[in-house]
Length: 118
Image (cartoon, rainbow, N blue to C red):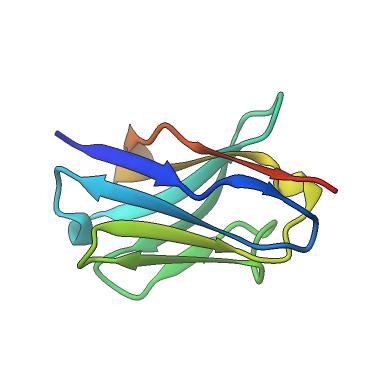
């Protein structure tokens, strides 16, 4: 069955960095568009970044462009999100998700918490 398991979250000071990982199993990772979505306390879901794991295309929300980098390792079936220059407003629960098509996510991981605070 399809599984997505995130890791790498934690507490970091403003300006710091973290790398999130999402280990995927149960499907052909390189055949899907994968995304990172976050939810800040008391707020709705916010799409952060996406990647066509079968090709070079990557996409970012304006709020993270230039600071975050999405990548995928098809040999390891793993999605990454390198987060640099973190800000307090990046504090959220971060989820990886598989896109089924038409911007619909059909599988989600359990998420990993990122807290940016001094």
